[in-house]
Amino acid sequence: MLSRRVFLKGSVMGLGALALESRTPSGMFGTAHADNSPAINPAVEVEEDIYSYEPPDNGAGPLWGMGAPMIVRDGETLFMSGLETLPDEEPLHNVRWKLYKRDANGWELQQADEEGRTREPCPIGIIPGEGRLMLSANPTLTEPGEHAGPAEPQLLEFDVNEPRTPPASHVPPWDSDHDDYGFSEHTYRHFAVDPETGGSFMLNQIGWSHRMWALHEPGGAWSWGRLDNVPSEDRHMHAYRPDYHVHRVNYGSSVLKGRAVHVTGRASYANWDGVGEEEMAEILDGETARSRWGSTRCARRMVYAWTPDVTSEPFSEWIEVGTTMPTGGWLNPGDLWAGPDDRIHILWYEAPPPADVPEQFLPDEPRLHSAKYAVVRDGEVVHRATLIEGVEEDGDELPGMLPRFHIGPDNRLFVLYTVSEGSGPVTENRLVEVDEQGAFSDPIVLPLQSPFSRPFTATPRGGTTPSDVLDLFGIRVGSPSNTLSYARVRLA
Image 1 (cartoon, rainbow, N blue to C red):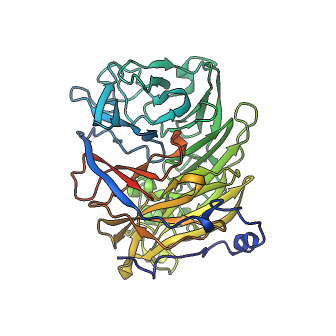
Image 2 (cartoon, helix red, strand yellow):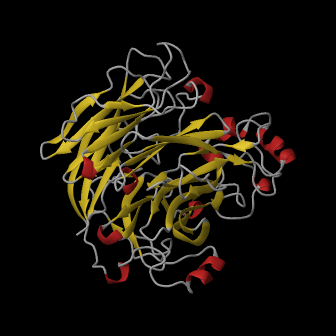
Image 3 (cartoon, one colour):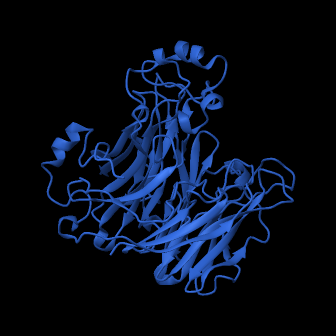
């Protein structure tokens, strides 16, 4: 049941930005035709399971790459990147990628990696006009039984008309041996394609300090470089290594448009506003923040960086889009879209502090969960809004941690989000439209038999053409936790 109390039809944060928006021309935010677009009436056409898997127990899983595209649409055909646990291999390198296709005959496995072992899921992208399907792979270079070690990032190219044919492999020609760069099984990688140019962009984490990126363009040309992580400020404490002063950026998304690249992610910290080393020592009692709360509940800043031409201009400094530093809470990236007017649209989720933090170290505020939306223009945040929020202790409906964009015909901009009753399971998947001024329509409940808990969508980041078909992929409420499912919803 929809709760009008917790659904917000306008922006409630960033009042200075809102004043600026009221003076901007129509069409600066959201979609170009939202005010004149017809109302949608979602119709569920397909709900089905795809495959089940054995948990790899390596710290990852099929949905671990939360911001990377895992399902893409090419006309009436879908491709999905799956993961298979190798029973005779030991973690961490104990899974392999699988490629599935769905057409009029349903889902069918096309092929699986016959040689490589890896740790993480392998994102994909489609180049619809060229018949190319790209997959970002990261096979280990270790011997069987070795727990961790070097890996070799690769770009695999499939023929969409012959997806059972072994793919071509493209490896970036790094300046020196790949071991010098520190590539390993832990990539936290981003992947994006541009269907207009045919380019593919990979971004892999290297330890704590930075990421390495590589751009592959038609004809085989490669460019590559480095994106540094977020440097500490005086008051910041590292969540993993107290003596370290660079904060790793994880779990976001990338968009490639021509040679322009946009990147989001979350940065983790041990402390928050008003809580310094002395207070953290009392709270943690000898532990690190990472060991106490895990990486997710230490993520406190939503950040964004970009470059207009990754081959010739460095990335900008990281820009703070959202933060839970004032509350001691945590956050998680949701989605990223670069509109046709070069406005950058960003979604994320914010949560209250871990429940075991003593009250004297926190502000006197309710335990608030919220889904957030922002617009960035020319490297500046020009709009912020809260899509939905709920108070945990009041039993409100609470949003889920992975809000997603869906792009319809004529670039109509929608947001897909999940809700639950308090801390219970997801009860509904909902959709709202974002209008020209950045405000939200009334929410519509998707009439699914079983909602998805943390859905992935077929996104333009992966080359999917905007359409009135919403493709959902992930784990459905009520299904086994190791079963991946699919739903097709037509927004006619």
